Length: 125
Image (cartoon, rainbow, N blue to C red; front, side):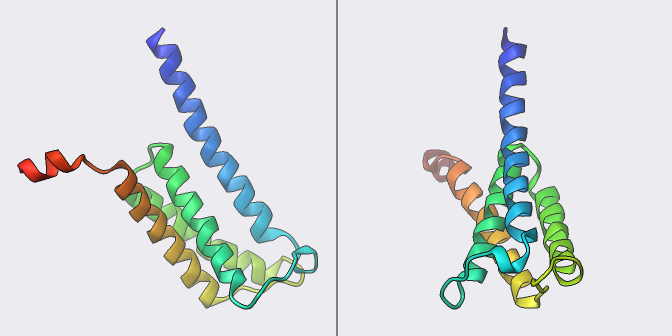
């Protein structure tokens, strides 16, 4: 019974990550003419949120911090190249890549804060 529950949790964790990745791909690779425009800077906020979501869902799937940092940053760089070369009416940007990195680091920081050790354990050391 315990193995079934563990398998179920494993599936939920990985499906969450796959869902987050699918949403990220949908938002990043939709042609520019079909994406609603927002106020100045809204694009960077969306990048921060997307990559923060990927970092948190990757850690939720029990992928290590360094591995999460590596794959999400690699995806960020690849997504900017793909946007620049193959997505109509979109362009890659170093500022977008910077926003992606900020989102990634913010997501990792949030995960540590939300899942960190209890204060009583930190105080006793």
